[in-house]
Length: 407
Image 1 (tube, rainbow, N blue to C red):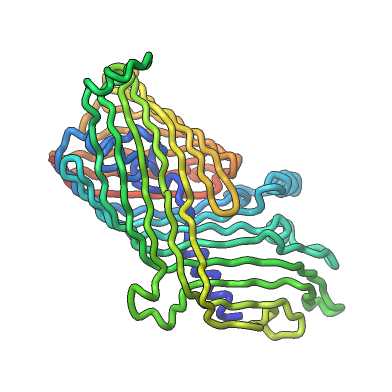
Image 2: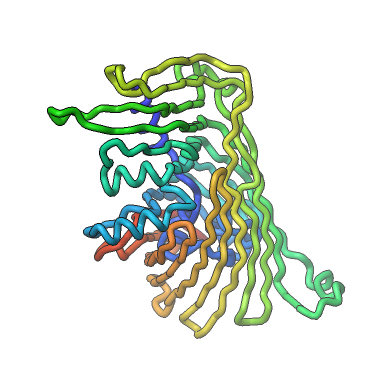
């Protein structure tokens, strides 16, 4: 049982899915495909060269958690029923987030290196019912369609963005005459550890006359991961590569549009360690390790593919409005996010940001806020979400901070 607890802690504490948590600016504002400069590496590779500064260096750290069930408020019995009904199709999804890294851009070229902790956990709604409402005597709870996967890995890559000459754009004879059209590409090399969990069967929880809990059922867990005891070099790590592509253009002097596809890639192992635990009501630790070993077969972690399309509107000299739609495809579920935000930049050295994001997976509206502190060439960005957590009904919290210099 200790092994399964440790493995689950590794998955829960060290693995997260990628969504808006890419930079402090996206944490405190939103995932907008028209972000320019060094932040474009993580939302739209085409916009990196649009920064007026030709040299940028930034160090950043982000962290947070999210889920589609629990929230920071008193949950009455009626609300419990509504929450459990809301996850009947999607299951209970837990998301933890983290990324730490360095970024450098020089003209049209960007270089970046990050430690990423990514993944997702999806549990059968019956598991959520036990957590939220408690178990019923002699009720059978299903573990089917419970999955977990993720990766802890280094993500090092290079970005190149290129402005298409204006005469080429004009020669297309398109009715939509864009200007300042840029295309961009990231290539990323990935190395690290990956995790995979599958659960099946069911469990029944009861009590003896003296009040002691009793367990029975056919539940089992299968875990697959790197052989952590024998990692001697890169040949024992999961490896892979990924691409990001994007395009950006100005529709007129006030409106810009962007489109990107991110995370086209995966990590894989040719040999992995597996551990199989079965439910045993007579065992001392409930879930009994019945089989383990090394298997020569491929296990893969596919990066969550993201499609971004959005625009920005310079409403006033000191106010910019942004809009974005993001589709995220995980291994076992999908999410659609609609984002809107505004940046107030009257004080050039302290831009203020506010954003709102609706997620179909969480069925929740998240409020984001952030600011920049620009002291000459030195720039610091801070972002926080969900600020509803300062009051109630928040399903998670994210925080990000970066610091660096530009000129």
